Length: 82
Image 1 (cartoon, rainbow, N blue to C red):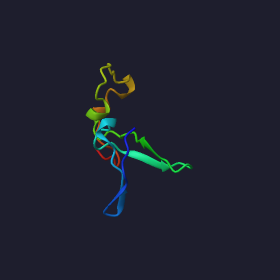
Image 2 (cartoon, one colour):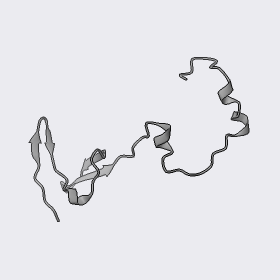
Image 3 (tube, rainbow, N blue to C red):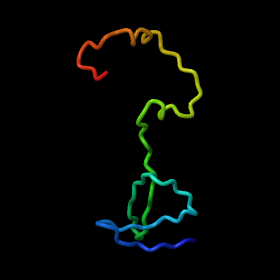
Image 4 (cartoon, helix red, strand yellow):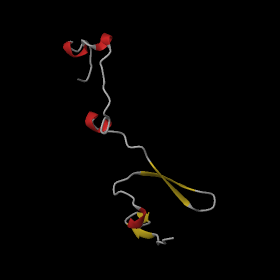
C-alpha cells in the first residue's frame, strides 16, 4: 500500500494520488469524510459538452421517428435558442 502526506497548497490541503493507481489527470471526484476519518473519493459522471462527445463510441443506427422527420425544415415559432 502506498502512503502520501497531506500538504498545504494555497488555501487547500492537497493529497497526492500516486501514479501507480492509474487515475487520469482531470478526473473529477466527489469526496466525503467517513465516520472513521477516512476520505472517500467517488468519480463524478462527466456531462458531455458536445453531441460528438455524447455519442462517442456508439455504433448503433438511429432513425428519426416519423412524427419528427420534418423537424429541421421548420423555423422557430417562439423564443427557442437554435
